[in-house]
Structures are given as C-alpha cells and as structure tokens.
Length: 483
RNA sequence: GGCCCGUUGGUCAAGCGGUUAAGACUCCGCCCUCUCACGGCGGCAUCACCAGUUCGAGUCUGGUACGGGUCACCA
Image (cartoon, rainbow, N blue to C red; front, side):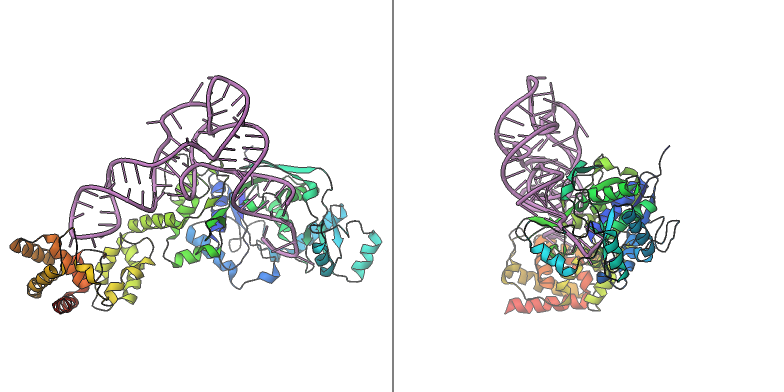
C-alpha cells in the first residue's frame, strides 16, 4: 500500500514570520506536494506569556502571499480540527493523564523557588526527579488540597534512545541526558514538547519537518510515541539558516543580522516569488543546474535527497540578485504599479516618472533602491569639482563650459522634447564641431545630474527632467562654470 | 562544560572510489555603450588537518581542529 504522506507547518504566532520558519514551511509543503500528499497548518499558541494580538494573521497572510496553501488548518477546516492548540486543551489533559496512569508521567508539585535553587547546585542540570516517585496518597492529598502542579514525562534512567533521521541518519542519545520535561504547565497549558506529539499523531502526520535545533530533543518525543504505543513518524530535520555576525562568525539567523522576517523583506521591496526561490535553494539543491523555480516547478523537483546537512548562511547579495532578476521579468504594468507610487512620492511634478521608472527597471535589485537612485532629481546636488573632468571622453571643465554654452541655444530651440530628438541634436552638434559625442553627452549629463553615475544617459535624463528643468539646470551649471 | 550535528572557493552548492572538482552569487578583466545598469565573453579551489583502508580517496574509517545546535512551566 502506498501511504499518503502528511506534513505540517506548526508555527508559534510571534507576530512576524522569520525567514527560517518560512523555509521550514516551504520544505514541509514541498515534501508533501512533491508526493501528492496533504499539508496541514497548525497554530502553536500554548505560551500564554507570549500572546501577540493578530499574530496568526501574519502567518495566514505570509502563506497566502507565498503560495503555500494548506489542506487543513484554521479557516479551511478539516477532519482533525481544531487547528489552534489553545482550542485543544482538553485533549492534551486527557492524554497527559493517560500517561500518568500508565506510569510514563507524574505530577510534580515543586515550587519555582525550589527549581531555581536547583539550577544553582553544581552537578544538577535541571530537574532532580524530586516528585518522580511520590506516594500515590501524597499526590492525591496535594491534588485535593489544590496545590499547583505540573505533569512531567518520566524518562528512562538508563539505556539509549535512537531514531533514524531522513537527512542526518541515525541519531542516538543516552537516556541519562534526557530530563523529566514538563508536559502540562501549571497554568494548564501543554508545552510544545508534549502537545506537538499528540497533535501530530492525532492529525496523522507522517513526516515531521522542522529545524535542526530539534535533532537532539527528538528522542524525548520518540519516547512519548512509544509510551502511547503510537507509531513514530519520519523525521526530517533541516540544516539551520545562519547569519553573518559583525565579527565574521555565523550564528542562527536573527534580527541582528538585518531584515529577517518575510514582511520586512517585502516592505523593502523584495518580491515573494524571489524570496521563495532564493530560500528554496538554501539547504536544498535540485538534481540539475536549474536556478529559477516557480512554486509548481519546486513541487515537481523537490526531493529529500537534495537536502543538505550543513548550515547555510543567508546571503543578502544573492537574494538581491534573485530579486533583480524577478523585477526585470516583471511585465511593464506590474512593475509600474510598484515603482510609480514610490517615484511619485519622491519626485517633483515636472519629473516624467514613467520614463524614470523605465530607466530604473534594470537598475534596481529591490524597490527600496529607488529612493537612493533618484536623489539627484529631487534637488540640485552640490557640484563636486572634478566631475567635468573625464579621462575617457577627454573632457575638462573648460571644454564642458564651451559645450554647454553652445548647446543651450540649440536645445532651447528644440521642436519636441524626447530622447530621439535630443539625441539627434547633440549628435549633430558633435559632428558639426568635430567633438566626440561622448564628450558632449558627458558635459550635458554632468551639468543636469550633478553626479557621476546616473540611471540613464544625458538625453534620457533630459527627457525625465522635461524641458524647463533641464534648461534651468544647464543655465545654472553654465553660470557656475563661468564664475 | 556534557551531549548531538556539521566541515568542497568570501557565499549557496554539484559530486556517492578513477572528473580537466559542475553551476550560481560576489569580485576582477574585456566587449557593447551618451556615465552606470542590462546583455555578451573570460578569469579566480592543492575539497579543514593528520593518519589509515585501497592499485587509486573530495568521495570509505579513525583521530584532531574549527564551526554550529542543545541542555526552560519558549517553541
């Protein structure tokens, strides 16, 4: 029989979608979809202290924007609901008590103070098992007296627990390394360590896809499956996403490395398709050298044997390259829909923003680049002394002054104001005066842009500025040179 | 510190015992060109180290070093 594969993405609603989490969601989704399986979304909101208003919406929105759709989950329903853990509390309680009855878990009445002092005692890393073998009568008495309690998983004291990870192979941990972790907290909420196992089993999850940080705690979860008599799922641990620190070292990608949430990147002008394409290749590689993938192509190409074992450093440069490629492929209308509003806000009215947007299309890697590219159109920049001097075109301030003086009347007389006409005028002038076209263009471009590097050539910029602004800038530059 | 995992160029990576060690980003040249960008062409690696196994090792084994993760009433 061919088992239907079921994977899930189980994020905690923190208010933002970390790019590493998004990649986990993507791989989990792709694993399932590459094999015609099901994909479930489950919200893990069992930490009452970290509740953030509207945080789940960020998750829904991100998955929608990236095209990661789920067969079951909040909003879409499914036969295993509810899909929000805070709505499943009675289930966890029931299963935790089952484990207490079967001797795999126990009530613990230790106070926070006692636990604190334990931490300070050398030689005891964590809980000491104080309540592990409390007499039944004492437990009953404490419960009846309403003493606060937690429920802990009873770990075996000896032996080892191992499992076979789909990417890392066999992982084996001494049971003595395992602590009696809390399953149900004092507030009645379950911990991740416990409820994700219950949910994954109840929801029929066959492959648990998650970050490598769970590699060494997975034996604890295996023990839980064993205690319940449930079949263990397949584990697919993913290499971590790293960020480059200021000191050159790397560590788990986090906010200090820059924009690391999906929404931050989108706000900076990165396209969801580009982000997905880039992170798909961070920790996974296709069998051939294809590098651009649509979601459908990813579904077709994804396979677990392409997963890497070693951590991957998130490289903004490469993301920028991907994004630039996606922007270049954007149809005119879609590109303008994003670029024009930014330009209109930045530029004076006389600027031909549509033309400017066109010049920028192949020159930006993210839409946030627009701002720094158009600084010179907003205002006349202070002139740097040596800009008129250009070795390749053999220009000098003196030559530029002459060119500007000559060209000003020619341009004032221009019948129409578009690139072709303007280019023709200047080209003709160059031919007539036996000057290099490059020198003429250089003089004019520097005069109006007042900076060395510009998006577009002299006549293109003239079109962007329009007749009045261009001539105004040229006259100003000429006067400046004549001083 | 204990335990676990990893290590092919600055980065992402292919490679599965015999290859001139793919490809991409970055960087650097050259070409195109009214600057830049786009586009085109080209360049940049003794596979962390040391032992072993083998006729032969980036590929297998062991050790060392380095890096990372994990040891919560967070997930």
